[in-house]
Length: 147
Image: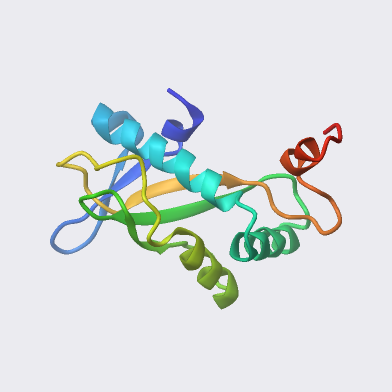
């Protein structure tokens, strides 16, 4: 099981309140879809655009420049596999919430979710915060520098 699957919990919506299904109890199709969704959203949060750059900068400030930060996200997807809504427990800065929404809502995931998948997915996304003045390794490699 990959690190993505180990961090997965699927929130099962139902009358009353949501319950979590631990990764060990989730069907294999749910785990595969959650792993693909985690990878897709992680790549999206590493994109070079204003919203994701601001997000990484804000996370570096709140995490005192730590190399890697982790976001816990609840992710709702529609039948075609597009993110329709997200929630980030513990994220209280309205600007960060807005940047997360701008970066992720409307994004296509890896195809249609399994028919019986319950949403929201509860995913833990690893991202590298933007540290002012320090280019990301991918950017340095692209520019010919050694990372």
